[in-house]
Length: 164
Image (cartoon, rainbow, N blue to C red; front, side, top):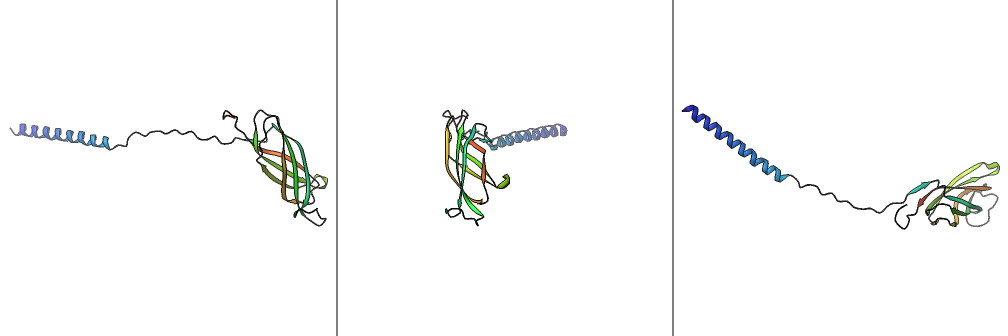
């Protein structure tokens, strides 16, 4: 009789443990966070920058030096203001804007005196020749006799369809 009571007691205890584990696991399932919902948003495309664009050709580049205060250049001045006139032609099928120009100021014997950069925001449409206007740069060495101009980079303009 003792064995029978012990067997049924242990069996009842085993059933109680299994039931409590099932109930506890159900509660844990309910506590789990809901499935994550993925939100996809479309962002505005950013400008694509082209380094040293082959489509843009400098047709004309002129430089005039003036005194820092806008007066004619004096002999004893070491610093001047440069006024550049740059004309660029776009041979490519896409437009450009935010053109960064590099001006290399040269002295006698083509000795490099200084480099200056300038960003011009004027758009250049495909197949067009555009004057970038009067570009004034201060702090140029007054000993500069001439200047070379180079395009460092330009940003592509998006086409009407929104693609480059």
